[in-house]
Amino acid sequence: MEKEEAKGFGLNRWLVVLLLVAGVFITGRFAPITPHIQLPGEPITDVLFTLPILGPFYLTNTLLATLLVDLVLFAIAFAVVRSMGDENSPPRGWANAFEAIVGALYNIVESTAGKWAKTIFPWVATSLLLILTANWLRILPIFETIGWMHEAHEGGYEARELIQGVEYIVAEEAHDGHGYEIIPFFRGSSTDLNFTAALALTTIVMVQILGVRAHGVNYFSKFLSFGSFFSMWRRKRLGPFDVIMPFINIFVGILELISEFAKVVSFSFRLLGAIFGGAILFAVITTLVPMVSFGIMFLELFVGAVQALVFGMLTLVFATVATISHGDEEHGEAH
Image 1 (cartoon, rainbow, N blue to C red):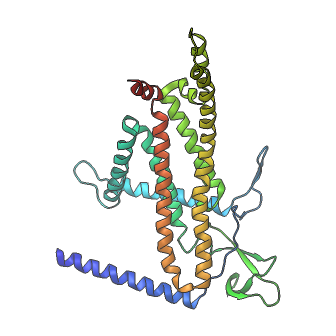
Image 2 (cartoon, rainbow, N blue to C red):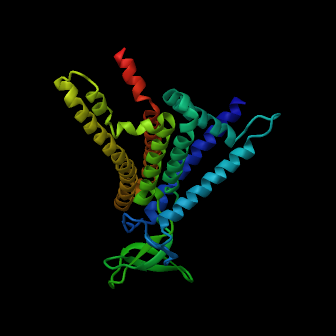
Image 3 (tube, rainbow, N blue to C red):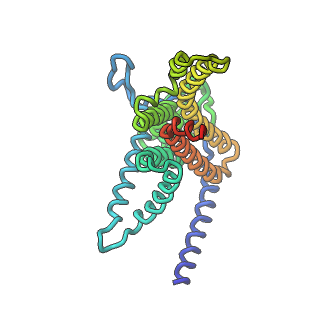
């Protein structure tokens, strides 16, 4: 058994070495070009329909990439269910791997959220897996390489015919002034502000819902704290601190309200900045030094995993804080 495992490890090691050598050779032989850098997702279709308030709706490459991410997650879920087995056979393959991952993640959520772990865990796991899959899929060669070719307004590259009806762009500037660029069919979902903002807004709305479920209508008292005014008028003697405290509570409530909106902005631009900046860095470095592109991919995998973990853990923290009873904390401090 040990000899078979050692043999398998040796084959995997040589396979990695072979991929590294192939990557260096391919990038050295076929120099990559700098893609067109644009923050919004590029439309790859004409107007599909027009909404009354939002206006025309296009199918963008980031939206198509998000649909691909959803299909991959559904496929993984189907593979896990198929690998679960029955009562007489233990789980295997995909089921074993995801049982370990989900179990470790649930232990983290349970140690932080306590009795609310079962409610918070699906949100944390869904956001983490969605962002992780989106960040890792964008490393595939089909992203930002295959798409519609159009004439560039400035500069551009030479176009050559691969087969009849299919052309490709080479890393040579157009000499006649008629260069071409590519609008890719797939672009990383996290490089589009629409994707990150939608995730952030959904997360913060979910946090407010959890807060209302935990405390009822009293949850909003941390934003609109007027209770100190009513208690102040019931007192016979008022000191300077009793007069100032209600205004301080109102100011703190305003800060709490602002912080909820700030969380949406922070969530959106943290993920967008890290992934979009990484995409630009990858494009620039591989254009200048094509030989290191294979190594930069490993760095992108690491950054993508870290950003997914950060988003998931912040979701856990915000949701847990929303379920904590502030009244219980103050009562404990008074004792």
